[in-house]
Image (cartoon, rainbow, N blue to C red; front, side, top):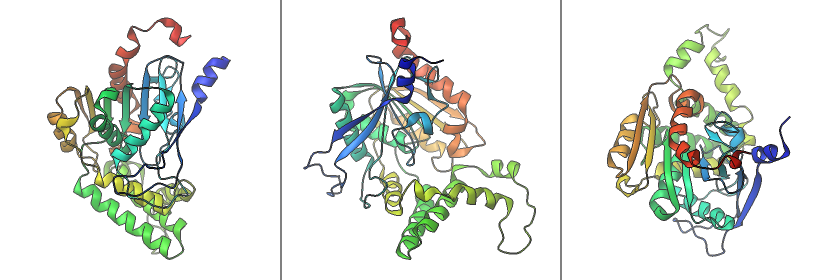
Length: 328
């Protein structure tokens, strides 16, 4: 049976930081939230790693990335402190124009609340990788290592095109009083970009449904993915965070910390050419990993062995010289 200490490290504890009254987004807007909320996992005094994921992620990193953030895992809760945080705006907040730099600034409020001037590493995947890049540019003195997975320095126009359709679906459904239906449809569309044609070909037959308009097998899968997603977000929140992804644009030359970049050749949202461009421009590139995957953009969630090896190589130096008591 796990010890009390181990259970506490795995479950974590919430951290709250007050958002100052004069805090303004780069757009000039204000957030309705008065706090940014994070969750801290792992043993006291261990190296501190920030973990951030896609726009549906949040502070419960052991739930949205359970193969990675766990005791004995690639991000080992027995040897590292891990800070994850809720992205703003929140589920029930009105939409705002928010940048990845704004999210990085909100993260610094949590770090200040913890009394931490510097993090040892930032591991970001998808939108979280964009936040990590923005953090490294805005606060170079506050970061050690940066690992970016399925993310780049800019939004690709092809990805913006698809996300633009999603935003228009969300706004249309919201304005028609069918917000939940719009969120479900937008989620279905999103799933077609997270995965690949090869995976769909392997998984789903083309057995025709009984009548025109009925769902094909692949459609049943997408419908199941959209069902209930309205409980996770609102149309306004999704529009804000989707727009934030498309506004993301930083200069790779400004990312001066040691950088590891991981990209997948099947990712249509973040083409590997952009990963290469980011790596080529970064002045302190540690490693560029190019990998095939049948899972496309979702490879950061599904390619567990590869992600495990990459993160072990990136984070092991943080704990290699630490005393064994940290893991006790």
